Length: 241
Image (cartoon, rainbow, N blue to C red; front, top):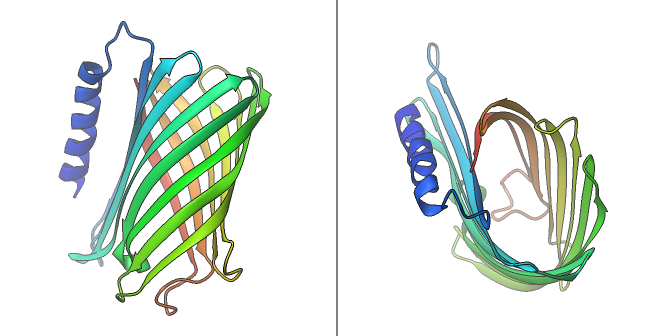
């Protein structure tokens, strides 16, 4: 598991300078990897990786492609596994207002999700945009189709709200707090809430360490025997390009 995780991270970081020309400031990217291995009375291994490529198409138009994957094993048996990707386009005709659209896919069989597709639109407001404090607020509708591992499917229109805050201790060390709500407009009992709290500390060059705590809450999981809340505490190596 550790070998696979390391190879994925090294491949991403090795290819990024080729994909992103060093002289072209319109491209940027980030890769993040955490891996844990425990042996002795029990054998536990877990891996989490995510990254993105961002492209500034023009002064007011940018695109971003994100990927994430996670996998865990307990005593040689797979205990968790998830994959996700998202393509997002942002348009900012006049500061501090911007508009966006995104298409995402997510799979987590251990959480009962065989496939989740989300198409979303909306607008945002950059409430704070200083060198120390940054705060973005977003809202808009989305259409979700979710295929569950029990064979059932569900389609619904939802309202999405998001808040993202970051505080810079200095040029390279930062605190962040993200909060996202997805609320089914047709069924008030169907909603989800995701939170990420993190701190990044620069190492050297383009590398830093990130300590994060993520909470994912699904008020009505399928099947109903699954836990409503997933919590993850991780320490990751982050590479910026």
